[in-house]
Image (cartoon, rainbow, N blue to C red; front, side, top):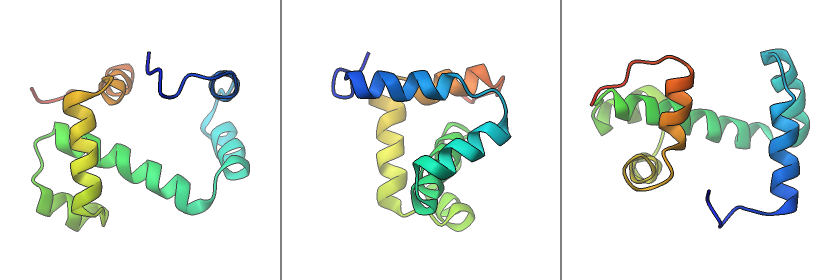
Length: 99
């Protein structure tokens, strides 16, 4: 558990997200909750994470996603040092990840 994020408000947010059942539900909720740039940034990060786990080089990730090298580095740090949240999601999605 990441104690930096733990709060009653964050628990409420995550409980709300866990009630969503379809992509349409997600679109409706996240369009209310977030700005378009916030959603785009989160979407970009998860795509970058997937590409990094597939051993895609930074230059190709920049080309395909438009992500900055700073964003790619930040995501790479998360993949290597943090809570394994990306990997948990990829496993739950049934994605084959390079080791």
